[in-house]
Amino acid sequence: QVQLVESGGGLVEAGDSLSVSCAASGRIFSRDTMGWFRQAPGAEREFVAAISWSGGSSDYADSVKGRFTISRDNAVNTVYLQMNSLKPEDTAVYFCAAGSIPLGLRSPRHYNYWGQGTQVTVSS
Image (cartoon, rainbow, N blue to C red; front, top):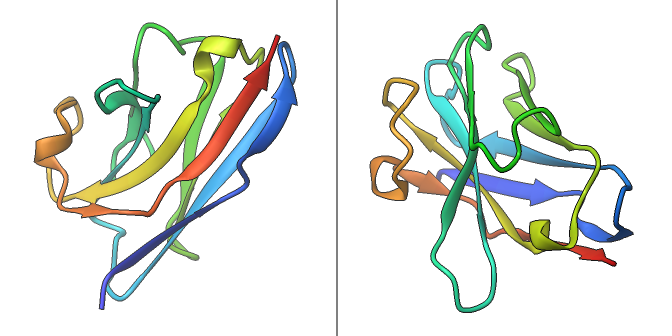
């Protein structure tokens, strides 16, 4: 059974940093593009960042570029999202996703597997 399990969310203040992780099991994800999405209450799920299977290329939403960094360790089937200079508008449930797709496809519908999400709350 395929599983993506996020961890590391929490409550922080504006300007703080936070890292979330996503551990994959049940299949080999080393050839998948891995992505992070987020969803605020009443809003649609939106793309945050993605990383190619090799980790050599990444893609970021304009709203997080320069503040967030995505990385992966294929040896332990884990993808990370380091979030710096957090803002209240970054508050959302953060989901990781995996897909056998090329980097650059940002719609959630392109991703095959999803985690259950982890809450990130940034207070002002």
